[in-house]
Length: 225
Image (tube, one colour):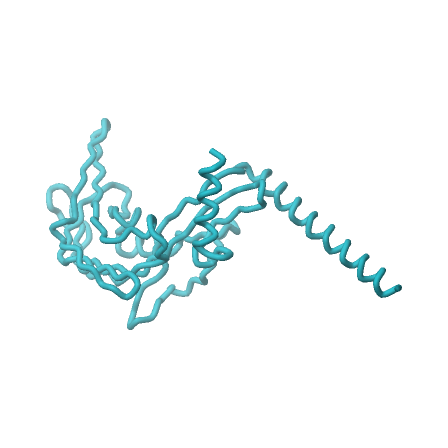
């Protein structure tokens, strides 16, 4: 009889602890400001592909910056600083510089998803030039990707854009022609739902139950709008 009572007490304490932890997490999320944010996806540079291996250049998968925040963009900044190129999304590229410059692409793009390689002719890379009132110009390049992982259940892709050269509007070379390393991109997600104690900003592949659970969350967000 005593053992049953002990078991019952232990069970009740466990339930109380679980409920209090859940409540505390919900309060913590609400104090953070954002309480309702549907899944928002990005495709970020995860690493360089060398000899079929991924080089993170010494970064851990969960990189924490000096502000003690998880920074999944760190690899993008490293690539940007070294090669002066920025991948805004799977379909958009621009220079990683204080002012916008032009990019000369010398090779067709090679994009690999789930082991299948696609070729994107360099002639199909579309240059978009925006002129602003202050006289400055923003130049971006649109890439017609065969598969946009932000709209599918795919988690990653490999991209090889070959050699590039960065020039100004007069043709003056800003950064000489060089080969951009083959890059691995992975999908990330930011989602907040305080009522359910959910707040996540990280790699999709590490989300509990993965993309399937996120798709269910998407349905929930649509149903409560």
